Length: 242
Image 1 (cartoon, rainbow, N blue to C red):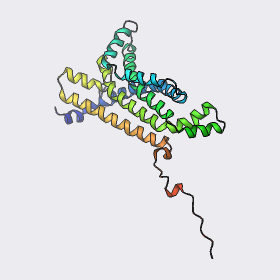
Image 2 (image 1 turned 90 degrees about the horizontal axis):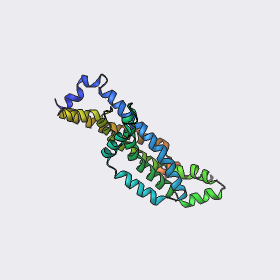
Image 3 (image 1 turned 180 degrees about the vertical axis):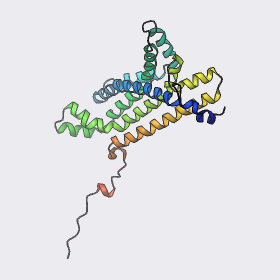
Image 4 (image 1 turned 180 degrees about the horizontal axis):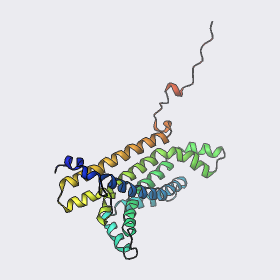
């Protein structure tokens, strides 16, 4: 069977093992992992960027987490957790752990870098207006750092979606099932179709996050409004009639 034939086969689009079901399972696992990574990475990045403390630790930690072998960590976590938990959580928790470790570095480093790179003059002006440290962070630094933060979140989301296929190694669902099952059955069409579905899902998520970023970020920060645009210039008063 060709790749097109596999993708267009109605049997692959229905039932508990159908493409819609596996896409939802893939998205569910990815969304939970991204949410956990945001809870861990964003507050730490904001704190480090605002105080300037721990930046060396952030760089070293990010590089160390990126160097971890995904499958190795997954298998070790399964071996450690399985004797203690007998439910499906014995496989879900290790999968989430691997994905969170992969997603935290870009979120943490981009949040820290975005806050740290805010113009010092803007921070000094806010401080001169009497704003507290928390208000400076939330009302000045955070909005200015938002473009870089969202870029890190997009990178983390794409890495999670691409790597969530490893969950199939421990019998979980998701689009990785087509890769693992296709490899076991020597079914090239199924493997290639699964890979194309993962790529398509990543592309759709990227477009959605780009659209959300366009709505969330001020046009002035993204230079969508030129400083010389007629909308940004005051109207020139007309000369009085002679």
